[in-house]
Amino acid sequence: MKKTFVLLILSLIFIIGCSSKSDKDYFEQAQKSMDAKEFETALTDFQKIVDEFPNSEHYKIALLQTGELNHGLVNKEITKEDSYAKAIKAYGEYQKKYSDDEKAPQTLFMIGFIQANELGKLDDAKATYTKFVELYPESDMAESAKSEIQNMGLSPDQILQKQVVK
Image (cartoon, rainbow, N blue to C red):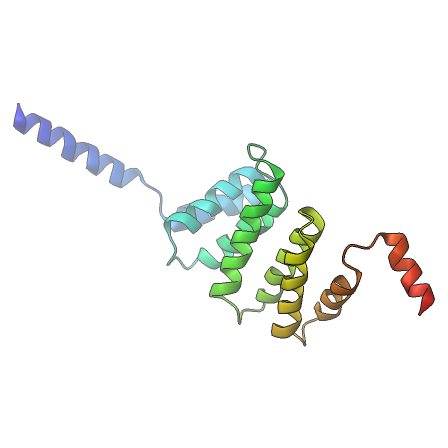
């Protein structure tokens, strides 16, 4: 009886081990889902890479994609606020791990954008945009970040009025 039970357990472990997907499998499936515009499925597969394969060669792209897809609110089973929080988390992790990467400025800018325009957290957004200008003063987006700081909390009419006065 013990021998049969042990064999059963070992067989289950073997079957589960053989059927699990690799990071490459998840990445390829996510790419196919993106091509088919099945964004929620793509998000699930990219998130698997982020959660289970932090040393994968696909991790960096998966992290960026989870930020973008969460910002795009593709997961209909969570609130907008939760989706934005997940986007900020992914962008923040990207920023921390790959601060010298060409996409790093974009991730930091998007954190500020979400904070200001999606969540209404103006103080957080101002701090993020200020950090952006300090870290990436030569970026194409630096002027936009400065403008965001100057016009934060103003209505479009107030921004126009401010421009007319100059």
